[in-house]
Length: 118
Image (cartoon, rainbow, N blue to C red; front, side, top):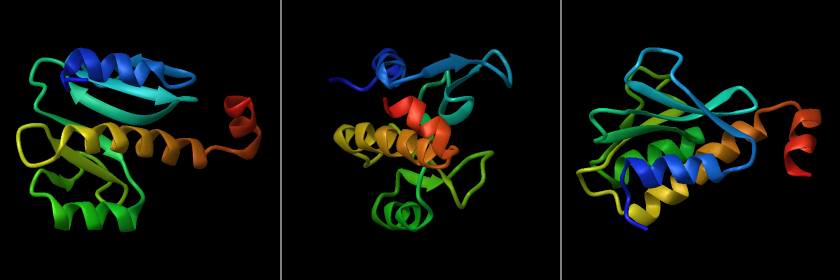
């Protein structure tokens, strides 16, 4: 699947219990699960996405790819900004979206996790 804003949006919304919103401004599209962000991007300048990441894995990715940097306007320990115009393969970006989603789900209370995993 080609990676563009339409495929990104469709994929994020295909994940269970995902909702989209624009809580910050009319440019920033945010995807949430159970009210918690797992992905965001600029709607008009779709050249990067922010994704949540396990901290040690985030560092490993940043060391391996020039196109993965600490999260722009985010907690740099837990978020990466993925440049879509550099050296990050599309296949990895799809995996990192899943990773981000699962990081958020794992951080939810067990009762909420159980409802999502049914």
